[in-house]
Length: 239
Image 1 (cartoon, rainbow, N blue to C red):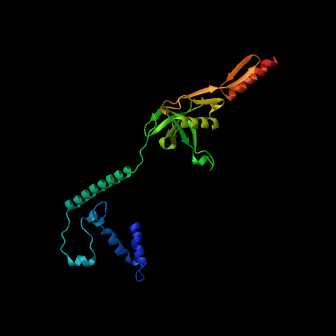
Image 2: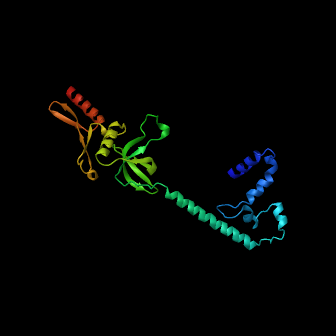
Image 3: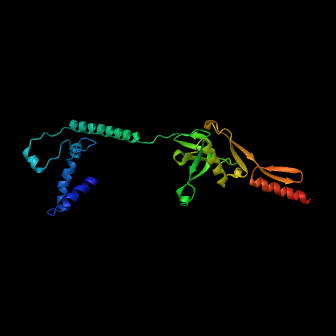
């Protein structure tokens, strides 16, 4: 279509010609132009011979009529050229394609938020989530950091790896504190047990939410549990 548009544009820019009157010449030019992919002209692939203008056909009228075997040979060669060109294009495309660095089970990742459900100032990623299973075709099963056993399935392009080492632990801690879905984040402190060695960094959780009632001290692991214990203490004190 782009080639046809270019030819018609050239004709239209000629003040002595009208593109409607030149369609026969345009058709002949297209049918007699050799394709870079097939190596043959459309007329050769259809009839086994090259298209010629009226003047050239009068100069050489004794052209041999192509046989059926010649036509099949031309089409077979064109088919081979198409396959060779396709393989070359695939190799060229894959040469500049980014390689996927796959995640492993146990890695912490962030999930890219959907653009349809966020504002301009909203967070671009949510999480963190832990990879519980590696699936085929660059897909993963994820699980949240809260108490929920819900499993999510996401493709690789929608995930971002949480940095390892001390910086990664800070990111995880900050996200857990700000994430409304992380129920266990309330009253939890994430501690880097080995900041000097990034490969052996682990996360430990210390819960400090406590309530006192007389001589008894109760420890809660979340805000919800804290409210429940506080209510029980008030009921017991009323008795």
